Amino acid sequence: MMNKEFLLSAIHDYENGGLGNEDFLKKAHVIYNEYATYSCSLPDAENPYLLGIVFSAFGKYYAENIDYYASIMENALFCFGKVMKTSESVSERQCAAIRMLLLIDENDWVMKGIVHKFFEQKNFELYRQPLLVQKISAQGMAPWTYEVDILTHIGNYCINESRSCGTQSSISSEEMARFNEIRKGDKYHVRWPLVRVPIKQVFDLFQDFISDYVNTPYERRVTQLRYGW
Image 1 (tube, rainbow, N blue to C red):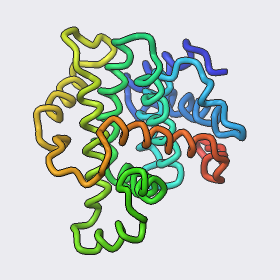
Image 2 (cartoon, rainbow, N blue to C red):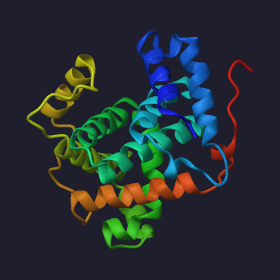
Image 3 (cartoon, one colour):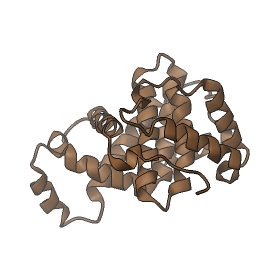
Image 4 (cartoon, rainbow, N blue to C red):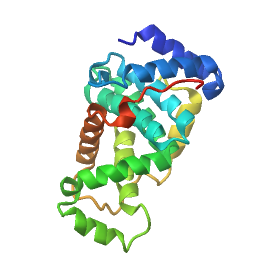
């Protein structure tokens, strides 16, 4: 199992050079490969919050490979979602919500792709109508209308779950500034929802979907990533 000290050292490396820090990239590959197996041990991993930070930082390294990029993002979403739902620490749950919102906002196109699959798989639970009906409706709408609606709900839930009177010591001032800018804007304000269920249910369904992906041995998810090859 991945120990806490190794995760913290990887995060420290990222904070000192980002994706340009070779030490971070080497460690991030080791961490990712630890869970690119079947059966996947990520659901039982300790320190999901720290793992989520590493995965969220690592994803854009593979921005040109949609399979790897999506798999890393799924890991990050799973980890932050698990913390939000199960952590005994209020502060950790709030920080995970902040980081999930930043993850969604900063990885727009891959998130739309992930949510498109969610839309197709959980369609009836979300809309109470067959998928074919929703696809016909989508033809008369702007591209990604349903995906944006779902992401708006998830982002809104993250904002609600992040509320606190205290400061978040594990969130940098730069990250908090980005979060506050997003929070004060309209992007994640739900006005005319297309889904037929409450915001929390959208989030719970999405986390169930992500959990299923993490636990399914898709080829892209069990592929070991080699740094420098």
